[in-house]
Length: 202
Length: 343
Image 1: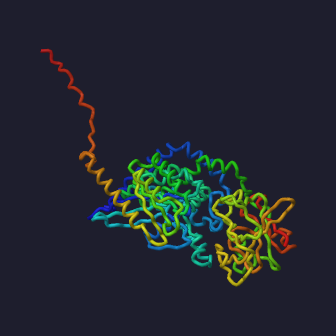
Image 2: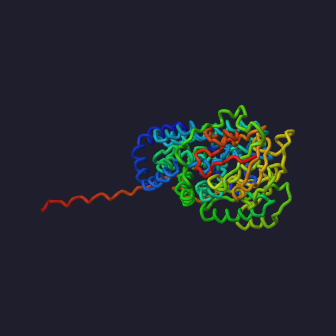
Image 3: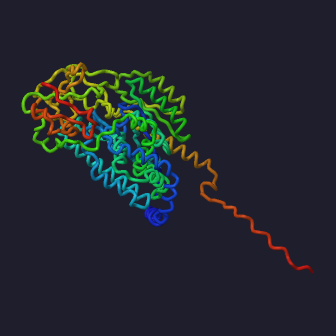
């Protein structure tokens, strides 16, 4: 039976940037102008067949209120990827992405895959998109222009995340010594005590 | 394979539960003590203190509380995690009832859908009300010893456990300490008889029998929006329930400027959170030399969020003489009592 690879993706970004709309559009193919987060949007899964590999994307929303900000690391611990979402009509939300990146660099797993989504790309941008792409490249992240409303760039964003996580997992597996892969453990016991000296005095 | 994991979970981990939990309890004994002290302080705190939205405050926990209190009865991490999931499902069922009771259009109902912040807020409230022991030990036990699936910590159960652990962490945070230090703990019981408005809400009888009813918030409430703007005379009060009070939540955004609108033609045109919010206007008044904010409400409709969140004090003489209720935040301290304004 083909093994399914679980991939945990955390969604980070300011309130109102459209994180929920984005993920609901991707998983449920729905969009509501007035969409607010739901439990279904707090934790969503999507199964993908990626080049023959079965992948389950587990998409975790994070608490957005300022008062809960310090709890972020609890949510992105063990995450394989983080999708940082900003609203292209709100420059502050892009600045917030930069601060999230700094925090992730300090607190998140070292090998976490980053992706940045400039959402609401169907509207006039207040952020220089070339700048944001340059920034994404500088931190080793990919950058996508997305629109939950017009269903632009969302599929590509999540597929890119899945592809990069799988590539990384594969690279890690290849670099790990075979003995570690087999999860063998060598237990060195105390050496046996020397035999007692012979009492023979011949 | 999953059944083997399950068997292992039940027989092996269940068998050594006492030893492992004993160790966890010992490991977190200091933190548990702090947590218990904090929860004791929060025992009578209002839901809004935890960030629970006003719309959901009357729902409050009900069956979820009973379910959550069983967490220490279960022995395996899986059983405990499932208990947690069931607790959250019961809260969500309550929220769905609130959403269904709002007969508004889809966008308005969307406004009542719960987000991760809501779940976390409810978890905090749950912990404060349930007073379950060994929360930290339980969080550690579930996080470290849930075996049932290799990827369990990334799955749905993992999500619930993470929310639970996050709530424990938040209760011990400096921010929570500060909130507790600032808050005026509500009195345990009211000296006067109170009656929930829920009982007569369906008959719409809470509003004034004659003429418009006005409610004035005490000056202890802040009506400053996050963006720094203040509400102004003539603004619609449709968004007011989002505004923070000195003891309340901070869900909110800005007051939408809508001119004084009393038309009954299109009750939903103010984009109110509930279609029952028919008419409303903000009036700035000068009361005892201080400016305060009044909510004007026509006698044709009573906003559901007021019905759900405020109780009428039947013994208040003002009410009987003016036929207007004195409203108080449930369990609030006297300074948060809303008194009727003068029409």
